[in-house]
Image (cartoon, rainbow, N blue to C red; front, side):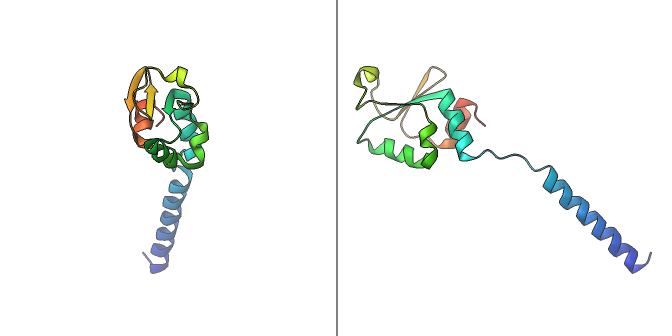
Length: 111
């Protein structure tokens, strides 16, 4: 084969590979979509002045507003059986403390 034929084949093959990567790349959920899903599938008990709660909030950033929250400082009557904050309720199970977003995704099925 001529040198120009090999060049053409390599270029066509390269274009095909690039096209496959562009067209079939996996969809990645945005932090907002992940937080909305976690919010639908869980409840978090927090409390004003709680340092660990602030750390959990900072992990979510602007998407924190999508979580389903109860603030035990303002709603004490809803927190009588909550011993520590933050406490997550997911599928009827209680998870105390700060948890990574990845762990919360696994626990809620929001992967």
